Amino acid sequence: MELLSQYGLFLAKIVTVVVAIAVIAVLIVNLTQRKRQRGELRVTNLSEQYKEMQENMSASLLDEHQQKQWHKAQKKKRKQEAKAAKMKAKLGQDTASGKPREWVLDFKGSMDAHEVNSLREEVTAVLSVVKPEDQVVLRLESPGGVVHGYGLAASQLQRIRDRQIPLTVAVDKVAASGGYMMACVADKIVSAPFAIIGSIGVVAQVPNFNRFLKSKDIDIELHTAGQYKRTLTLLGENTEEGRQKFREDLNETHVLFKDFVKRMRPTLDIEQVATGEHWYGTQAQGNGLVDAVSTSDELLLGLMEGREVLNVRFLQRKKLMDRFTGSAAESADRLLLRWWQRGQQPLN
Image (tube, rainbow, N blue to C red; front, side):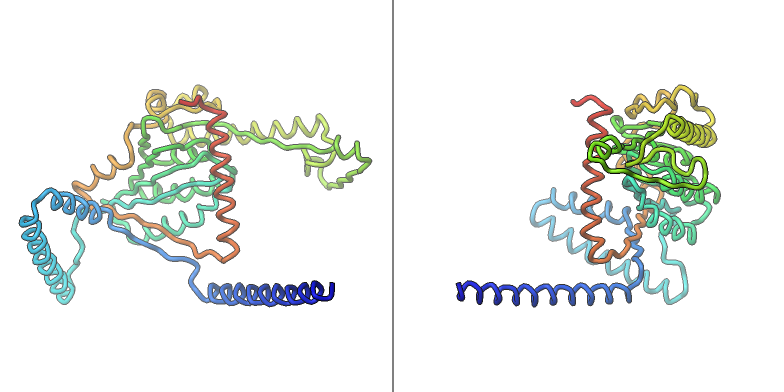
């Protein structure tokens, strides 16, 4: 017994030391992160990436001797281009391609639409350098979420339209509810054939544990100032008056949603499409929810013929704890999306 007691004491000391080291490490990491910037803006030249891929594919089709000659010619070409760019820089000339630019943004939205924080940075960055002949493409994927979050995201896209910069939204998978609220701000919406589009409606559900608590002789007291400060609650007893007010609030939000979509796309028969239903891309084109059926890949490849296509991403720096909680939240969002899709569409 004495041996076990000593072993237990030794083990407790080891655990204490390990926990202490872990706490100190977390504190050091957090202090280091505070000194860093809040995020990083990355610009990727998609035109150059595609050109490089195309060249590599062409080279792979050559025999060994031809490949050596090709690589030699490419090396010489790059040296000449670098020399020419250096000379232009010395003379104070613009080293850009001279082509109009297509700025590509990405938004993969979650239920709380926290991605709007990066979107606002990206929009601000693009608007700081955009020229009248430039355009913007947003690759959008979202099943929707909280009204205020997606309302703010739509307002960020409205900043592009207010500057009279042509905006195209490309949807490869889903732009429903709040996602479509964002999409309809665009001058043009392009959808993949089987992308989910629409769901112009509002939904809310509140679980209530009042009867369970009563069965356990647990009382819940709720005190408010204002007749409708609380309508439906989780724990208290809900009234018919509260339910009615809750429905009225939902209907009011739905009216605002419909008015917004109608204002953005005035040719829509809003009463026909604002039923909460969704449609696939080809169907959505038929009822006016989208303007063309295509993937974002085909859209961007077509634009590369006469434009320089640049992808802009703002990467927020996450704290150590946020990385764990963020991963859990993303997993929950993906699970909710799968449930939503199973409940809203047939499986094939």
